Length: 140
Image 1 (tube, helix red, strand yellow):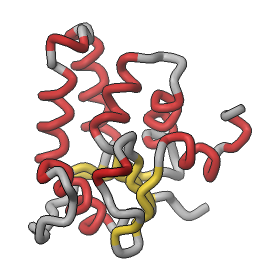
Image 2 (cartoon, rainbow, N blue to C red; image 1 turned 60 degrees about the horizontal axis):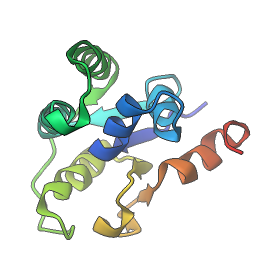
Image 3 (tube, rainbow, N blue to C red; image 1 turned 180 degrees about the horizontal axis):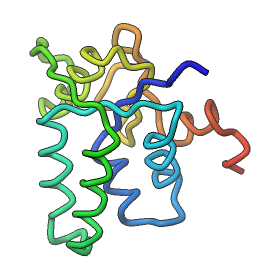
Image 4 (cartoon, rainbow, N blue to C red; image 1 turned 45 degrees about the vertical axis):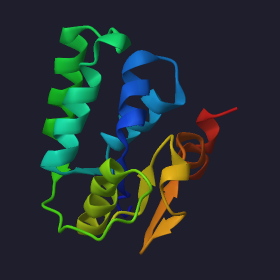
């Protein structure tokens, strides 16, 4: 089976940490499993760590550390090139840069309005859309 190449927005990772029964947790677990390949950059890893540590989320330190360590162990790190500003939120550009460097199939996000529908060969989709493609039996 050909691996799915994925980039995952921070909002999906945070939702996965907050809701054990949510669709985002399923996306994160699938992204860490073969045949999927999760791609990150150093900038994305830094953003994950910074946002997961925000006090308003009240995510236990041990859970944050565990999740970040899992991501570092399972994800493939790429060094993206800088792109022209494509997204409406400048911080979101790093996800398109990573998708570009990884030649990702999908960028999974909860903020589709910040992104174009496609970026080159990468389709930008929600967690629900991603699961309907790769694991339709898991959503109801």
